[in-house]
Length: 594
Image (tube, rainbow, N blue to C red):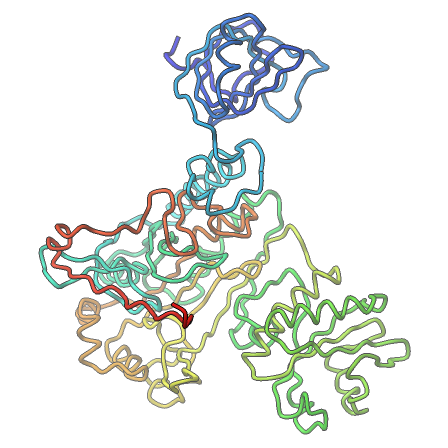
């Protein structure tokens, strides 16, 4: 018999009754019922119930052990009997009468419960992540991640893509976030940057004559954490294709995403085909560029209706309305609580009206609406008795920030929100540039390596803020899964595009020397995309926080509480790297007594 096990803890069935077996695993739970000891033994594959009788060496050994100790047991498989079958376990028809026990790894008292969710805080869980990963939910999430990545690789190869690796130590690149830098011992005073994305290298693969590249790529960005963004590092399915237009990229990626979410989504319905929504339309109808399409409610622009209104709250401001049908029987609390929700987002309040029988309007602002206002609202919003209308007014971005989430929240509260579905969309036609409201500076709004729609002519003749890029995102259930673009592969267009964003020719030649040199030796039209693996798994696992799908994540302050990173370097190591530290100056205390 094998030194540690003849079977796994998820393997035994009724057909094994009478067999002598050897199992190894963790002491998951223990129950003493009438002097008989019942043990749940757990390994990667499942749980088997053990039985130890009083007065036996096995009973004495198992009774003293703490939970999560690792043991090897020898015993005989017996039937539980029909009245004791546990239908929730694949091994629930049998148990093992233990004859011999060997302790392989005794455990100290564990800091939190493994076999149940005891509400322990995240910091504690991350400090003892190796214990947290023993929990069933976390174990399941990590195995889901492994299966998803394996499926991605298989499907990408079937679609004609080839997996290739790109460097980790590279040069800095303006990807929109701060770089993590690594000092060079052999080149004093110089630094590598960890890649924010393999952007330039995957383009260079295309220029080198390869046709369809993919990689499960680690990316590093020094940015703050969010529920859907882990600080420090993340993984993406990095993809690039030669001789393609936008739709050529969409076809294989849409097929991949549909198959992935159908295979691992637990039967939840998947949108197919994905609708194409222009960026500006998305901002107007949904309040953001990552719309949650699990509701059909849409925002309607009414700015022109109230442009000359005597109602000061709307006059001369950007106004958008959300009509919610079948709310006629909702109590006043429905409206007030939704207003409180808007206030929590930064609004001063949420104006609303209700449509009663005969089209009579009631609500706080009904008296301020003229007959002409009511007529236009009825036509544009399709108002009928039972409708409620919520209004947002202010600057465009301000209204979007409030009314986008209000749209989703109102749908949930009014019962107009689909659960257990995946609603995908492509967001297309992003603006190539945006203006910094504080400085007035024109900058790239998306990916600086994108091809502008209209090419060089558009860059030379159009207002920069009117130029669209061949840029696109995939969104699902209000989460952005990826960004991509058809690339700018012509040096003249690249110089002009960066010039508009404030980069002179010398700077472009210095920062993108490798790319520019490659473009001058025959570059094919190419494009790509990079869906986030972490976010894909987060959606499939139905987890609200992305860290629940990553084995060893950093916390919200970009710290590894388990390994103690980041750490300080001693003086010897600093000298070896030619680094002298300049620590931040502590701010003086505001307390005059100190």
